[in-house]
Length: 350
Image 1 (cartoon, helix red, strand yellow):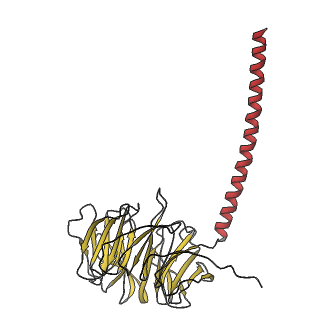
Image 2 (cartoon, one colour):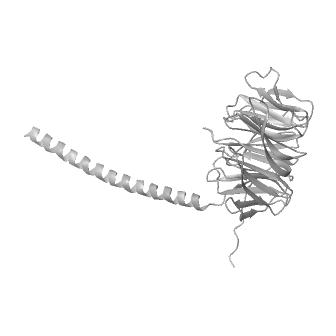
Image 3 (spheres, rainbow, N blue to C red):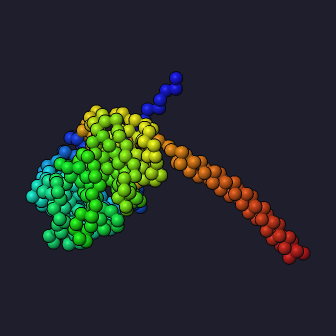
Protein backbone atom coordinates (compact mmCIF):
# COMPACT_ATOMS: atom_id res chain seq x y z
CA UNK A 1 0.00 0.00 0.00
CA UNK A 2 1.41 3.35 -1.07
CA UNK A 3 2.03 5.70 1.86
CA UNK A 4 0.24 9.04 1.48
CA UNK A 5 2.58 12.03 1.41
CA UNK A 6 1.96 14.32 4.40
CA UNK A 7 2.16 18.06 3.74
CA UNK A 8 4.48 19.86 6.17
CA UNK A 9 3.63 23.55 6.54
CA UNK A 10 5.69 26.50 7.71
CA UNK A 11 4.31 27.27 11.18
CA UNK A 12 4.25 30.95 12.15
CA UNK A 13 4.00 31.63 15.88
CA UNK A 14 3.63 35.05 17.50
CA UNK A 15 -0.04 35.66 18.16
CA UNK A 16 -1.19 34.90 21.71
CA UNK A 17 -4.87 34.54 20.79
CA UNK A 18 -6.90 33.18 17.81
CA UNK A 19 -6.01 34.36 14.28
CA UNK A 20 -9.24 35.53 12.66
CA UNK A 21 -8.20 37.15 9.36
CA UNK A 22 -5.39 36.92 6.79
CA UNK A 23 -4.60 39.10 3.78
CA UNK A 24 -1.92 38.73 1.10
CA UNK A 25 -0.59 41.77 -0.74
CA UNK A 26 -0.26 41.62 -4.54
CA UNK A 27 3.25 40.93 -5.85
CA UNK A 28 5.44 44.03 -5.33
CA UNK A 29 9.07 44.80 -6.36
CA UNK A 30 10.03 43.58 -2.86
CA UNK A 31 8.04 40.34 -3.04
CA UNK A 32 4.66 39.78 -1.39
CA UNK A 33 3.50 40.15 2.19
CA UNK A 34 1.02 38.57 4.60
CA UNK A 35 -0.81 40.48 7.33
CA UNK A 36 -2.77 38.74 10.09
CA UNK A 37 -5.51 39.92 12.46
CA UNK A 38 -5.91 38.38 15.89
CA UNK A 39 -7.96 38.71 19.03
CA UNK A 40 -4.67 39.63 20.78
CA UNK A 41 -5.14 43.21 19.38
CA UNK A 42 -1.78 43.24 17.52
CA UNK A 43 -1.81 42.71 13.72
CA UNK A 44 1.41 41.21 12.37
CA UNK A 45 3.21 41.63 9.05
CA UNK A 46 5.21 38.78 7.54
CA UNK A 47 7.16 37.88 4.43
CA UNK A 48 4.48 36.10 2.37
CA UNK A 49 6.86 33.49 0.98
CA UNK A 50 8.91 32.48 4.03
CA UNK A 51 6.44 33.47 6.77
CA UNK A 52 9.23 35.37 8.53
CA UNK A 53 7.98 38.00 10.98
CA UNK A 54 8.61 41.59 9.85
CA UNK A 55 6.77 43.61 12.49
CA UNK A 56 3.78 44.07 14.79
CA UNK A 57 1.39 47.04 14.64
CA UNK A 58 0.77 48.17 18.21
CA UNK A 59 -1.97 50.55 19.32
CA UNK A 60 -5.36 48.77 19.36
CA UNK A 61 -7.06 48.17 22.70
CA UNK A 62 -9.37 45.36 21.63
CA UNK A 63 -9.54 42.30 19.35
CA UNK A 64 -8.64 43.01 15.70
CA UNK A 65 -11.21 41.38 13.40
CA UNK A 66 -9.95 42.37 9.96
CA UNK A 67 -6.75 43.56 8.28
CA UNK A 68 -5.56 44.49 4.80
CA UNK A 69 -2.66 45.99 2.84
CA UNK A 70 -2.90 48.49 0.00
CA UNK A 71 -1.92 47.48 -3.55
CA UNK A 72 1.73 48.54 -3.06
CA UNK A 73 1.96 47.05 0.46
CA UNK A 74 3.03 50.47 1.76
CA UNK A 75 0.08 50.93 4.12
CA UNK A 76 -1.87 48.54 6.32
CA UNK A 77 -5.32 48.90 7.86
CA UNK A 78 -6.97 47.08 10.75
CA UNK A 79 -10.56 46.98 12.07
CA UNK A 80 -11.04 46.45 15.76
CA UNK A 81 -13.44 45.80 18.64
CA UNK A 82 -12.07 49.01 20.24
CA UNK A 83 -14.49 50.92 17.91
CA UNK A 84 -11.69 52.09 15.57
CA UNK A 85 -10.03 51.40 12.24
CA UNK A 86 -6.36 52.29 12.14
CA UNK A 87 -4.12 52.94 9.14
CA UNK A 88 -0.44 52.12 9.53
CA UNK A 89 2.81 52.77 7.67
CA UNK A 90 3.73 49.23 6.59
CA UNK A 91 7.45 50.12 6.36
CA UNK A 92 7.91 51.71 9.80
CA UNK A 93 4.92 50.34 11.74
CA UNK A 94 3.85 53.88 12.70
CA UNK A 95 0.15 54.68 13.15
CA UNK A 96 -0.87 57.16 10.43
CA UNK A 97 -4.60 57.60 11.17
CA UNK A 98 -7.21 56.33 13.60
CA UNK A 99 -10.82 56.50 12.41
CA UNK A 100 -13.26 56.36 15.33
CA UNK A 101 -16.57 54.49 15.02
CA UNK A 102 -19.53 54.14 17.37
CA UNK A 103 -19.35 50.34 17.65
CA UNK A 104 -17.18 47.29 16.85
CA UNK A 105 -15.59 47.44 13.37
CA UNK A 106 -15.55 43.99 11.73
CA UNK A 107 -14.17 44.65 8.23
CA UNK A 108 -11.91 46.99 6.23
CA UNK A 109 -10.59 47.12 2.65
CA UNK A 110 -8.41 49.49 0.61
CA UNK A 111 -9.64 50.39 -2.87
CA UNK A 112 -7.54 49.09 -5.77
CA UNK A 113 -6.23 52.60 -6.51
CA UNK A 114 -5.27 52.89 -2.78
CA UNK A 115 -7.06 56.27 -2.36
CA UNK A 116 -10.05 54.99 -0.38
CA UNK A 117 -10.62 52.85 2.72
CA UNK A 118 -13.92 51.04 3.25
CA UNK A 119 -15.10 49.99 6.73
CA UNK A 120 -18.12 48.19 8.16
CA UNK A 121 -19.25 46.67 11.42
CA UNK A 122 -21.93 46.33 14.07
CA UNK A 123 -23.19 49.89 13.38
CA UNK A 124 -24.65 48.63 10.06
CA UNK A 125 -23.02 51.54 8.21
CA UNK A 126 -20.52 51.28 5.34
CA UNK A 127 -18.07 54.19 5.49
CA UNK A 128 -15.61 55.32 2.80
CA UNK A 129 -12.59 57.33 3.98
CA UNK A 130 -10.54 59.43 1.56
CA UNK A 131 -6.87 58.66 2.19
CA UNK A 132 -5.87 61.94 0.50
CA UNK A 133 -8.08 63.85 2.98
CA UNK A 134 -8.04 61.71 6.13
CA UNK A 135 -9.36 64.53 8.33
CA UNK A 136 -12.48 64.97 6.20
CA UNK A 137 -15.64 63.15 7.43
CA UNK A 138 -16.20 59.81 5.65
CA UNK A 139 -18.84 59.20 3.06
CA UNK A 140 -21.59 56.98 4.47
CA UNK A 141 -23.26 54.52 2.11
CA UNK A 142 -26.95 53.65 2.60
CA UNK A 143 -27.54 51.72 5.82
CA UNK A 144 -26.69 48.01 5.65
CA UNK A 145 -29.66 45.73 6.48
CA UNK A 146 -27.56 43.92 9.09
CA UNK A 147 -24.32 43.94 11.05
CA UNK A 148 -21.47 44.01 8.48
CA UNK A 149 -19.18 40.95 8.49
CA UNK A 150 -17.13 41.29 5.27
CA UNK A 151 -16.38 44.06 2.74
CA UNK A 152 -14.54 44.17 -0.61
CA UNK A 153 -14.12 46.36 -3.71
CA UNK A 154 -14.67 45.21 -7.29
CA UNK A 155 -15.16 46.55 -10.85
CA UNK A 156 -12.18 48.95 -10.55
CA UNK A 157 -13.58 50.45 -7.34
CA UNK A 158 -17.03 51.10 -8.89
CA UNK A 159 -18.78 48.47 -6.74
CA UNK A 160 -18.71 47.50 -3.06
CA UNK A 161 -19.47 44.04 -1.74
CA UNK A 162 -20.67 43.36 1.81
CA UNK A 163 -22.11 40.47 3.81
CA UNK A 164 -23.83 40.47 7.20
CA UNK A 165 -23.21 38.34 10.29
CA UNK A 166 -26.91 38.12 11.19
CA UNK A 167 -28.53 37.37 7.81
CA UNK A 168 -27.84 35.55 4.54
CA UNK A 169 -26.80 37.04 1.21
CA UNK A 170 -24.06 39.20 -0.27
CA UNK A 171 -25.04 42.74 -1.23
CA UNK A 172 -23.44 44.66 -4.07
CA UNK A 173 -23.56 48.45 -3.86
CA UNK A 174 -23.01 50.96 -6.63
CA UNK A 175 -20.41 53.38 -5.22
CA UNK A 176 -21.75 56.41 -7.12
CA UNK A 177 -25.40 56.06 -6.10
CA UNK A 178 -24.76 54.31 -2.77
CA UNK A 179 -27.62 51.90 -3.52
CA UNK A 180 -27.79 48.10 -3.54
CA UNK A 181 -27.78 46.92 -7.17
CA UNK A 182 -27.78 43.16 -6.57
CA UNK A 183 -28.07 40.58 -3.79
CA UNK A 184 -26.46 37.16 -4.10
CA UNK A 185 -28.85 34.90 -2.18
CA UNK A 186 -27.55 32.43 0.41
CA UNK A 187 -29.44 30.48 3.07
CA UNK A 188 -27.06 31.31 5.92
CA UNK A 189 -24.85 34.33 6.82
CA UNK A 190 -21.76 34.62 4.61
CA UNK A 191 -18.62 34.33 6.75
CA UNK A 192 -16.12 34.76 3.90
CA UNK A 193 -16.36 36.63 0.58
CA UNK A 194 -13.36 36.88 -1.74
CA UNK A 195 -13.10 38.59 -5.14
CA UNK A 196 -10.71 36.63 -7.39
CA UNK A 197 -7.48 38.31 -8.50
CA UNK A 198 -8.69 38.65 -12.10
CA UNK A 199 -12.06 40.04 -10.94
CA UNK A 200 -14.07 37.21 -12.57
CA UNK A 201 -15.34 35.34 -9.52
CA UNK A 202 -16.74 35.98 -6.06
CA UNK A 203 -16.12 33.08 -3.66
CA UNK A 204 -18.52 32.87 -0.70
CA UNK A 205 -18.95 30.56 2.28
CA UNK A 206 -22.26 30.13 4.10
CA UNK A 207 -22.54 27.28 6.57
CA UNK A 208 -21.29 24.10 4.87
CA UNK A 209 -21.60 25.47 1.32
CA UNK A 210 -18.95 27.13 -0.89
CA UNK A 211 -20.33 29.08 -3.83
CA UNK A 212 -18.69 30.71 -6.85
CA UNK A 213 -20.46 33.63 -8.52
CA UNK A 214 -19.86 35.44 -11.80
CA UNK A 215 -18.59 38.83 -10.58
CA UNK A 216 -19.87 40.66 -13.66
CA UNK A 217 -23.31 39.11 -14.31
CA UNK A 218 -23.86 37.88 -10.71
CA UNK A 219 -25.01 34.41 -11.75
CA UNK A 220 -24.19 31.36 -9.62
CA UNK A 221 -21.40 29.44 -11.39
CA UNK A 222 -20.82 26.56 -8.96
CA UNK A 223 -22.05 25.46 -5.53
CA UNK A 224 -20.44 22.68 -3.51
CA UNK A 225 -21.53 21.07 -0.25
CA UNK A 226 -18.65 20.67 2.19
CA UNK A 227 -17.97 17.85 4.67
CA UNK A 228 -18.51 20.22 7.64
CA UNK A 229 -19.32 23.83 8.52
CA UNK A 230 -16.72 25.99 6.80
CA UNK A 231 -15.71 29.52 7.74
CA UNK A 232 -13.46 30.53 4.85
CA UNK A 233 -12.56 29.61 1.25
CA UNK A 234 -10.17 30.89 -1.40
CA UNK A 235 -9.83 30.27 -5.15
CA UNK A 236 -6.38 29.51 -6.62
CA UNK A 237 -5.53 32.74 -8.52
CA UNK A 238 -3.35 31.56 -11.42
CA UNK A 239 -5.18 28.63 -13.03
CA UNK A 240 -8.48 28.90 -11.08
CA UNK A 241 -8.63 25.08 -11.12
CA UNK A 242 -8.71 24.43 -7.37
CA UNK A 243 -9.91 26.02 -4.17
CA UNK A 244 -9.29 25.64 -0.45
CA UNK A 245 -11.84 25.65 2.36
CA UNK A 246 -11.54 25.29 6.12
CA UNK A 247 -13.60 25.57 9.26
CA UNK A 248 -14.68 23.73 12.35
CA UNK A 249 -13.01 20.34 11.65
CA UNK A 250 -9.52 21.99 11.93
CA UNK A 251 -8.42 20.67 8.51
CA UNK A 252 -7.61 22.56 5.32
CA UNK A 253 -9.38 20.89 2.41
CA UNK A 254 -8.19 21.31 -1.20
CA UNK A 255 -10.84 20.75 -3.90
CA UNK A 256 -10.95 20.59 -7.69
CA UNK A 257 -12.81 23.71 -8.85
CA UNK A 258 -14.45 21.98 -11.86
CA UNK A 259 -15.67 18.81 -10.14
CA UNK A 260 -15.74 19.62 -6.42
CA UNK A 261 -13.68 16.47 -5.68
CA UNK A 262 -11.28 16.68 -2.76
CA UNK A 263 -7.63 16.65 -3.91
CA UNK A 264 -5.88 16.95 -0.54
CA UNK A 265 -6.59 17.41 3.16
CA UNK A 266 -4.01 19.06 5.40
CA UNK A 267 -4.00 18.46 9.14
CA UNK A 268 -1.99 20.36 11.71
CA UNK A 269 -4.10 23.00 13.45
CA UNK A 270 -5.35 22.34 16.98
CA UNK A 271 -8.48 24.46 16.75
CA UNK A 272 -11.10 25.58 14.21
CA UNK A 273 -9.67 27.39 11.16
CA UNK A 274 -11.04 30.92 10.80
CA UNK A 275 -9.38 32.04 7.57
CA UNK A 276 -7.62 30.62 4.48
CA UNK A 277 -6.07 32.61 1.63
CA UNK A 278 -3.99 31.79 -1.47
CA UNK A 279 -0.77 33.72 -2.08
CA UNK A 280 -0.87 36.05 -5.14
CA UNK A 281 0.95 33.52 -7.36
CA UNK A 282 -0.98 30.51 -6.06
CA UNK A 283 2.16 28.55 -5.16
CA UNK A 284 1.20 28.47 -1.47
CA UNK A 285 -1.68 29.28 0.86
CA UNK A 286 -2.03 30.34 4.48
CA UNK A 287 -4.43 29.30 7.24
CA UNK A 288 -5.18 31.10 10.49
CA UNK A 289 -6.67 29.25 13.46
CA UNK A 290 -8.20 29.38 16.91
CA UNK A 291 -4.88 27.84 18.08
CA UNK A 292 -3.12 31.20 17.48
CA UNK A 293 -0.86 29.97 14.67
CA UNK A 294 -0.61 30.72 10.96
CA UNK A 295 0.43 27.84 8.73
CA UNK A 296 1.74 28.29 5.18
CA UNK A 297 1.23 25.26 2.93
CA UNK A 298 2.68 24.47 -0.50
CA UNK A 299 -0.01 24.09 -3.19
CA UNK A 300 -0.12 20.58 -4.71
CA UNK A 301 1.15 20.76 -8.29
CA UNK A 302 -1.73 20.59 -10.79
CA UNK A 303 -1.65 19.26 -14.36
CA UNK A 304 -1.53 22.84 -15.74
CA UNK A 305 1.31 23.83 -13.44
CA UNK A 306 3.20 20.59 -14.13
CA UNK A 307 2.95 21.01 -17.93
CA UNK A 308 3.98 24.67 -17.59
CA UNK A 309 7.01 23.68 -15.49
CA UNK A 310 7.89 20.96 -18.05
CA UNK A 311 7.71 23.38 -20.98
CA UNK A 312 9.77 25.91 -18.98
CA UNK A 313 12.45 23.25 -18.38
CA UNK A 314 12.41 22.28 -22.06
CA UNK A 315 12.84 25.90 -23.13
CA UNK A 316 15.71 26.31 -20.63
CA UNK A 317 17.41 23.17 -22.03
CA UNK A 318 16.75 24.42 -25.58
CA UNK A 319 18.16 27.80 -24.62
CA UNK A 320 21.24 26.15 -23.14
CA UNK A 321 21.74 24.11 -26.33
CA UNK A 322 21.36 27.20 -28.51
CA UNK A 323 23.71 29.21 -26.36
CA UNK A 324 26.28 26.35 -26.42
CA UNK A 325 26.09 26.27 -30.24
CA UNK A 326 26.40 30.07 -30.32
CA UNK A 327 29.45 29.97 -28.03
CA UNK A 328 31.24 27.34 -30.16
CA UNK A 329 30.36 29.34 -33.32
CA UNK A 330 31.75 32.52 -31.71
CA UNK A 331 34.94 30.70 -30.63
CA UNK A 332 35.40 29.45 -34.21
CA UNK A 333 34.90 32.95 -35.59
CA UNK A 334 37.43 34.32 -33.04
CA UNK A 335 39.98 31.73 -34.30
CA UNK A 336 39.29 32.71 -37.92
CA UNK A 337 39.69 36.37 -37.02
CA UNK A 338 42.94 35.67 -35.13
CA UNK A 339 44.34 33.64 -38.04
CA UNK A 340 43.47 36.47 -40.41
CA UNK A 341 45.22 38.99 -38.15
CA UNK A 342 48.37 36.85 -37.82
CA UNK A 343 48.56 36.40 -41.59
CA UNK A 344 48.23 40.16 -42.07
CA UNK A 345 51.03 40.82 -39.51
CA UNK A 346 53.30 38.22 -41.27
CA UNK A 347 52.76 39.94 -44.61
CA UNK A 348 53.47 43.33 -43.03
CA UNK A 349 56.68 41.90 -41.55
CA UNK A 350 57.85 40.67 -44.97
